Image (cartoon, rainbow, N blue to C red; front, side, top):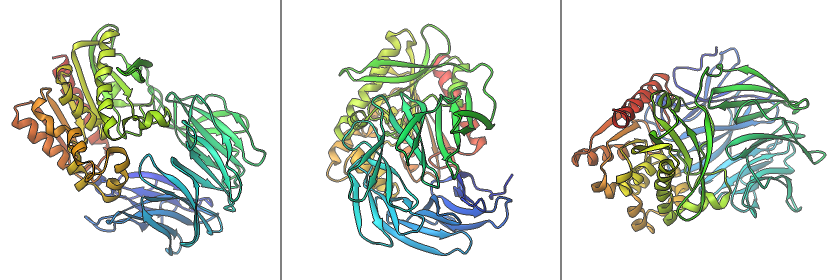
Length: 537
């Protein structure tokens, strides 16, 4: 074990020479992170970037190691909403700021540090540019949405994930002065993530096929691809290649198996489990279901049945909204099913993974249709015999918490109870109090807080709380700067003033994510107790 200090660790990355680990930590369990470097034996731990004292603003996130040694590319977010791309020497502590801007994110830097790949723009409208360093000429590579990128070692070729000119994201190669080349695309799937080997010869691609993962290897020198055998897991959440691309390390999980590590021999197409907990003995099955919205749009979801026949049921709404419910390990779902409550985790319009048109189908005023999708999900559950009409609840976190509140006040007759986990209640207060870079990025998704004020007010559940009837559990982290805790406080106050049964679970040492084990257990037990009380009591 390596001692990385008392704060929760959110990410770790080896340096190419194996001499350093980049470690990202969340002081106080909050959203504002620091970047540290530490030796593999746990020695020589040092702070590289991020707030260096309590209550300091700003945040730092590492992107990747650059070149063959000890230089780390870091994105620093300032209190004014500016992002600075910084190269930091882990050995000497030298810092070199190479680019800065609003709604900018560094994706890659060439080994000679003369070229950078920069992502720019708000959510849903991101584009990729290539820049001469430092602070030199920038050239647009592809229009929106182009959001993930890597460079060849010499910086001559950019590899990007993009849906520009297509509905589903593909891997595109771009060389200066030449037409874009499609490295790999699929009509039935979106490119979820990819990584390029350190020598630039091989890429490993993870495809999202209706939520499940499939893998492809691309020989970037010969320009050919081949499929790998199906991995022994439903979802691949992270991919890393060895320097020569012969081996891959995968973070994998399934409904029956917590996140674990697979070692993949890329040439042979074999997998070896090298770390992680064993699968559960008798897990609930995750069933992919399809059903229609009232306007004919196809919706999907993952159903976890407690038992056959109409049962108490809760709808779980994921965050984002540009995210996706996938067949991953969720201990809350396991606990609810064991307690006799079925779970349906749908992907309503606005979810990622189903193409650009589906993801954009909830932008601005179209969000009312996403709220309708929740009601249509209830109709599916009842009509298919999964749920007891009188015992349906709704819950979600972050954007899913918002959508839960919106569904509870728009369709109060449908729900027996609700759980709001760090959701927005009022877009006006959300925009006013969230981090400036989050507010700026959210405009394309939700609307402008000034120009679209009337729309955002109509979409804000807090202004319709006179219609709330479902007993409500509210969960939030006091250190949350993404969706500030005031969103929870006004929900609790409004529900209580109207005589609606309400419980407030506040974690003083958590932010937007619940990361501490004791708090995770308390959260799962609180949600289970709340839902079983109102649905099965």
